[in-house]
Image (cartoon, rainbow over all chains, first blue to last red; front, side, top):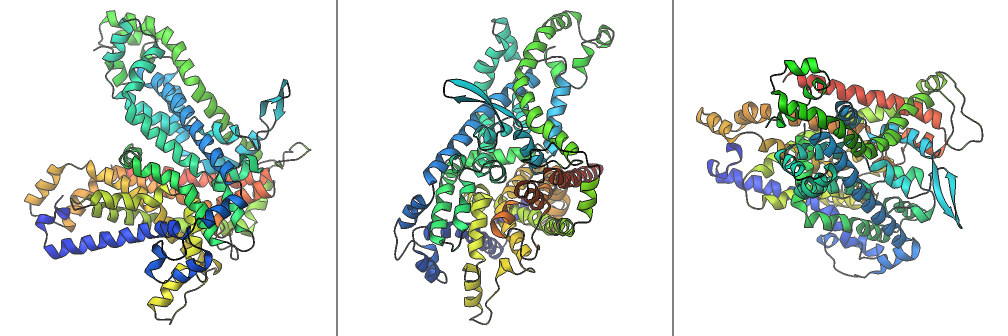
Length: 297
Length: 328
């Protein structure tokens, strides 16, 4: 585009645009850099360094004390494991269940197909926050099978469990929609040929369509993992005991009485590193998946 | 090839297969149609089986709670209560519309949306134009502008809580840059600055997300259009006004709807940073609903708040969809 093509513009304008870009870089990166750097400093030094470049550099009294403090003070290991487990299971189940539904909707012909597809798409326009509270009341009424000693017991209420943090987020209209669009772009002749060779529909799904759908799987994995790892509102309402608490809710430990900012920064860094590492490793896929989410229009 | 035709137009073909009369009116040869009809029955069972897990989960965790919201809003249900819920008619709504906290929440939510939607959408577009140019390091810029998006809102809120502390980063900067003439304020404890402070942080966190959406939209505009317009002597602003802007119509709808809904769902920042204070200046509709439903266990009343919120969000997105579609 001509507006952006440097060759058609005076050098001065190009340089000043580049200066704007660099300035914005600082605005977006520095708070996060500040967080990591401060997690290694004692509180006194964090405040002392605030007004100079030192706030953004790991200099002075550097140690892992804040991290040790975090583990002494809160069950950080447990919360991390909870979040890893919850996110992983949500992603794996989500990929399987949503792709299976999208397969049936995009590559097969059956009665009631349109009704199911329209119904699923209709759920897209309602944000989770609007029905979160009735959902809390509802999951508290749901029965659940539990092993007690040597027998299975039907227990009442899902509050304070793992499944309540996973199951409501497995089926997702948007994931189904993304798979649906991707599957629709694969030539139908492939199914035809496989049918002639005697493949079952599930066989076609498993051996032909899924192996061809790497980008769609990656997209859904990312778009399921992010909200699962970052979820806050839901576990805040349905999880009370330490045992089942995920990482984001753990921050509540740090705001009682005097805030120890060094430890806050250490905890915040710990729960951010896994996502940032994933992001930096797969940033092309990340940005691509967000973009494909928008292009659907 | 005949197999691909019904797929290409799923809106008309599948039902026509049920009726021989309509099927005969279609100009398709009979041989593949007969085969298709036979296969059709088997496919219905398999198709239903494959969609069942997703459909059941959506029924249990979406349809039921949404239906319950409508029912519970007219009862005095409590989260944990030995007594069954009783039907109370429109009592919850009468209380709600007389509740000054509800009106404050609604006002604050609207204030947040009215400022954040245009500011964030506009800034995101500016960022997208900045990094769409073929310049050195544009992928690096993109990645960094996107960093706050992958950082969770909880962490971002924590971080900015420190930035906004009375002796925090922002005030230290202000005082250093004004050579001690101005000390700033206790941003989050000042009723007139608390909401703007949260707005600034929210835009900072999410603007990268919409930058990427705009970028995807920019990619869909054909380079030929720019060349043709440039040949006609258009450049700079005119090129943007007559080629870029109309080309972004679809993207615009999406960006506006997603930001508006996100703005109305404002909760995490409030919960981590201000708890609705000072003097209810940052209470929002979702925050109020969560407070009444979860802390005070008043499920019925919270359902009424949720229902009002539901109607507002639905109305706004339908109106936006309608307005942007009309111009198409």
